[in-house]
Length: 353
Image (cartoon, rainbow, N blue to C red; front, side, top):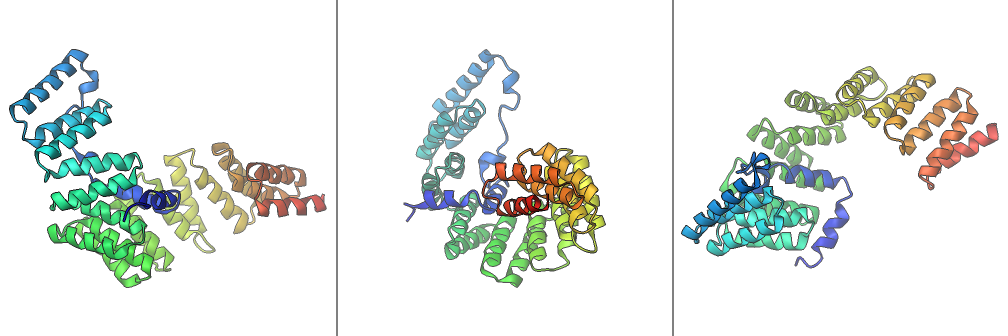
C-alpha cells in the first residue's frame, strides 16, 4: 500500500501543505519533540564525565535488560551526543524488550521522518499502532500522512481512534478541520477548528488556521482570530502579517501599514513587509516616490526579489524615470527570465523612451 508513498509525499513538500507538516511535526506529537533532555548541560562537561554517564546507563541496562526504559534513556542521551544511528538502534532494543513500548516506535518514526524516509516512517507508524495501541501520537502522525495523500477516510479513522483514547487532543480536531476545509464542508471545518481552540486556548496555530480559513470565506471574524493569535504571541510576525493582508484594501490600508511597521520593528530585515508597504503606496495611494522607497528597502533585504524590481520599475516609470524603470525590468528578467509581466513592462517602457 505504501510503495509509492515517498514519491507522492515528497511531491507535496514544496507546496503550502508543507506549512501544515511543520506545524504538526513540531507541535510535540512525537516524544522526540517533547522529551525532557537528560543531558541538558552535558556539552559543558568533561569527556570523562560523559563516559561515566554512559557507563552508568549501560550498568542499569545490564541489571535490567528487559526494561525498555533503560534503552530509551540511553537513546535520548545518544541523540544529544549527535549519534542518531546509536539512538535508533537503542530504540530498536527497547522494542525487542517490550514491543508495546510506544516511545520506541514514536521516536524511530520521528527519526525516519526527519530523514525524509517516508515509506519506512509509515511502516514504523503502522507497527506502532499495531503493537502500542494506546499511542495517540502515532495515530495522529499516520492521519497526517493520509491527509496529504488525500486518503481522508483513513485519516478520519485514525483521528477518531485517537480521540476515543483521549478526547482532549486539540491536534485531532485541527486535522479534522483541515479535512473538512479541503472537501468544502465549511460549517464542519469551522466547528472543528473552534473545538481545537476550546480544548487548547493556547493553540497558536489553531487561531492562525481558523483566521486564514475565515478570511478565505470572506468572514469578518477572521480579524478576531488573528488578533487572538497576536495576544498569544505578541512578537509574532506571522499573525501580524496575516492580519495586515486581511485588512489591506481600499478602506483599511492605514491599519495594514501600521502592522507592517510593527513587523519591521520586530524584524527589521523583513522584505515582504517592506514590499507590501510599497504595494499599498503604488496601488492605492499613487504615492510613487514612497512606493519606490519601500520597494528599494525590500530589494536591500532580499536582492533576488524579482517582484520588487518589477514594482519599483512601475513606480519609477510612473514618475517619468524610464531609464530607472528599464533597469529594474531588466533585473527582474535576469532573476526570472520567464517573468512575462516584466517583459511586457520593459517592452512598453522601451517604446516610451
